[in-house]
Length: 551
Ligand SMILES: NC(=O)c1ccc[n+]([C@@H]2O[C@H](COP(=O)([O-])OP(=O)(O)OC[C@H]3O[C@@H](n4cnc5c(N)ncnc54)[C@H](O)[C@@H]3O)[C@@H](O)[C@H]2O)c1
Ligand SMILES: [Zn+2]
Image (cartoon, rainbow, N blue to C red; front, side, top):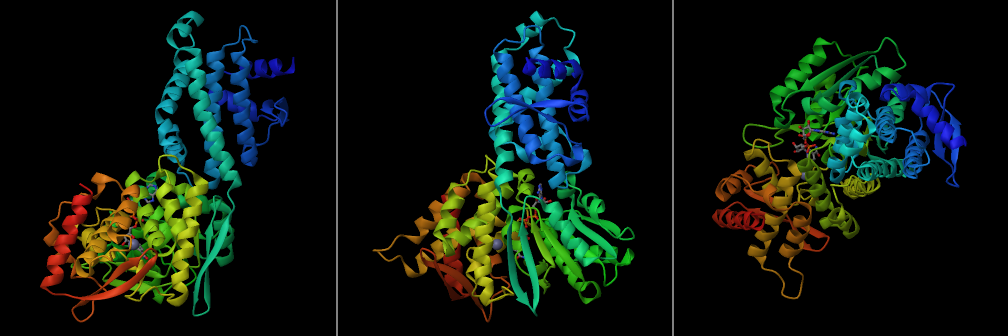
């Protein structure tokens, strides 16, 4: 029986997981996979560098098959535990290899833990860890145990169930990646200069195209410490840059969320030290904080050199990277010093979101919710229904695309996004005050979530709510609470301190501040409110209300 001989063949080569992958990828080997009729087919194994998504999916099906066949007890004498353990590890390994071809995963982070954070639904964390411990024990440590001893230690059906759950999750993700279509949008041209926005799972080929079109003499990647824990973009660039004389440097900002002028100056001095020229390219690789610092550096160096932005947080993918504004903070408030500078391209890969902290996922979703509340009911419901514990690539790509489209709609009228009357500023007066007081330790979008509730309350205090209309305070609060629940919004500052900090808003004019009011669903407008004692009292009351809502 052919199936049996394939399995026996594999098992004969199973010494450890490295051996099996070597065997499975060796030119003379074959491996099992399911064809359309659910029969096993045997395919020649390709070179690892040619590994395609189909290979990985087939491999997973192959594992499914192995588990199923072994379960039927046809293979007396085969070491089912060992087989399961090896195939499980092998499957994770080749999926990881595939991911490393489409994401700049740092070689030293190329391990089972990164795989879990990056790719697996958090609901399956325990099952994955159990399977990993089991597989490692079986392959490495427990091969001397007799089969009775192994049987007594592990339940076959439990092991099979866990392996199946995890592998099915991986298989489904790979299938969704395979089905995700690339999206190309573009920023409104400034001085006839265009900036494409690519949203793509396969960022490497996009980067390669853009960088090799520019043909820079030197490349400076600006990133930050947390991003560099997981990724190494310079390494990826090195693999495709055509000009062998092109030098690649990396500048890593520490505590990038502070966005201080001195951090920006240090990065500028580094660029000078490395003798970047007018023909050099800066690649910003990180969230909105690195984006702000890097954008300033690109504009100030020689009065402006080319840059590409590869945003890695959800917030930066939907908002910070979509535009040409860059700024750093002053002593008395956020974004006090800034410039306008359009990138050559923005390259967005939703897979980066896999390693983001839950707080920063919620932060990005809150900012997307703001666009939904102001502009699009469809987007609003997509955001509210998004389950961030299951990393659904298609849904997140859809939310990213829809949110960017909303922002671009605005920018048609105001390409610099500089008007103080922008509804994009909804919730942001109080958000910026909170962010600044917390020394940027509270994520931007979480502050926006708080700000939207508090500012809605401010308007209901000032104008009341029409009795026949939906209460905007409830409408906004209910939506926000679905994205950011309870405790994350608690903050240590008094309502008075926050209200005070609002007065430093950088869009205020002649003692009045432009607040955005959601008059009705998806209908925002601007209200200039005079800075007086009444406003202070009302702000304090609104902030206390928001705090109460989330306590
Ligand atoms: N220019 C604009 O239009 C604009 C718009 C909105 C916000 N902003 C600014 O952006 C800043 C906030 O940006 P942010 O929310 O992206 O936060 P951030 O850049 O501070 O990043 C948050 C944290 O996540 C880490 N990180 C980034 N990507 C990661 C990844 N893929 N995996 C794991 N960790 C990762 C970062 O290192 C950092 O520790 C604020 O200063 C805000 O004012 C600017
Ligand atoms: Zn914002």
